Length: 287
Image 1: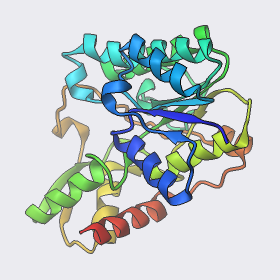
Image 2: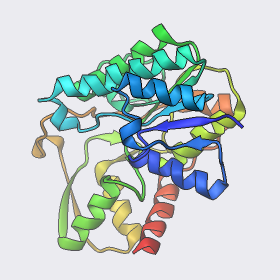
Image 3: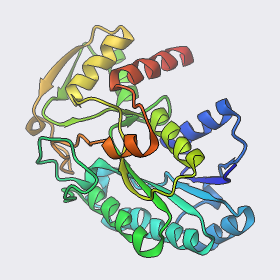
Image 4: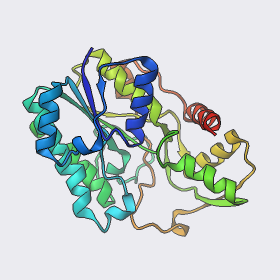
């Protein structure tokens, strides 16, 4: 089996990998503590690579505070660009395949048809620009890489839209939710499953891929589904983006075309509501 190090193991996606690794009994995954796997600490990273001699490195580490990044571009760039460059250099040195997670925020969001891997990337936020810049450093340093763009991630772990809605729904009778931004809710467990599948396939079809669940939704649709599936009678009111001001601009349309990833790896991707039902069921079991 291919030895794999996961960076950003304490975050949402990293915790999803941990869950699956335990369930599947995969003993070739390594989840270093944050202190020894800081992607800005080149010396510390070198020690990890030298000690473990991995075949794959999965990068889940990122600066993801979208609004905060508008006023803290330097830190966002350090993590999302310099950190990725550090990993790519070491992957090249130790002949490791890098699997890097990126985002639908690399797109402007002014189209009305699903975005392909070669669609023009034109970010409208600092966060999106730093993630795109991070993507672009990899091919200059490394041939063996998979960059996987995703969006609207949620799970039982960490902070995310599903858990926020359930919390607010328990406190309020009605909620206003944006209805004019379209994307695809993505269950982070499904994404982690796909990455494990890619590793186990031993594929050399390197490059950029898009992955989300199937279907299209607005944040309003997403919230409505959360409350329906959880049995809540919270009233959800659709509002335009203009009524909910944020520091950073969000793409109005970030639905991604998954044809490439499905054909290359023989995937059947779940519909977003089906995966959401599974997640909510698991959250209920936890409570």
